[in-house]
Image 1 (cartoon, rainbow, N blue to C red):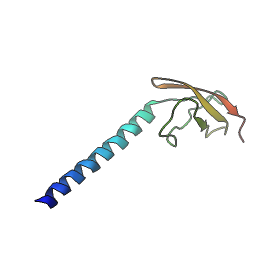
Image 2 (image 1 turned 180 degrees about the vertical axis):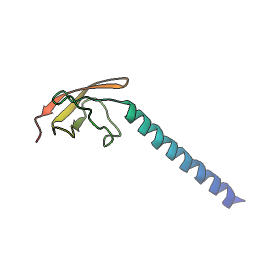
Image 3 (image 1 turned 120 degrees about the horizontal axis):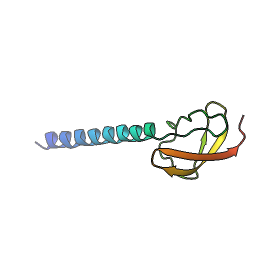
Image 4 (image 1 turned 120 degrees about the vertical axis):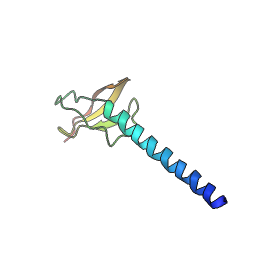
Length: 84
């Protein structure tokens, strides 16, 4: 009986973790950042805990950007370093 209960609780934890990961991926896919230098979309997949003043890199032009504003789905950034 105890083994079945532990297995059920473990299964619920796994489902919860999978749900959290999927929700985080959904939120990241909705957030958009356009590079001010090259005007391309910046991939945010490598930055799961993104917050204001975090540093991200544009995969297209290599410029380093600092997040200055987070409003809903739109992120704004300014150039922190000229990059490659």
